[in-house]
Image (cartoon, one colour):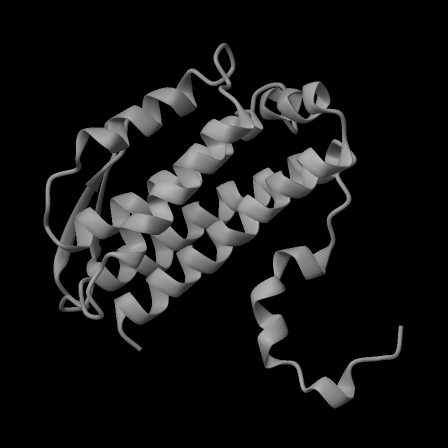
Length: 188
């Protein structure tokens, strides 16, 4: 399986799920309470929901540019800054949906082989704290970007659940419903 075939559908499907979770939150509670979710955290030393959304988008976008050996555009710096400052300025649910939509649009605009680089191609990834990771393209995709993406995605899901948004596993894996044999669906 190519990196494009692995990453693009994964990011697109799961960002779509994240978008639907935010919509469910808005539908289930008064608007002010739904907007307040953006400041909710699992623990005092963790980033809030608004940051988790932005950082999930960062992982998907960064992968596109890093794997293509392109400089990161200013939009990624904007997302990172918004995420780091979300404790004081969480933005709105509309802002979060816009960030998700922008990321999905970037992914949808890729060619079918945009990320299909040599799996052994060296990739240097410097972290904000100064540590440097020396990875291959495959290691970066598998061990860094997907892991980081799912961390932020699951943290967002967990924050929403902890704030009493009615979500379940079906919301997390909604993209799998298209594979269900209709005759095997239990009667409601």
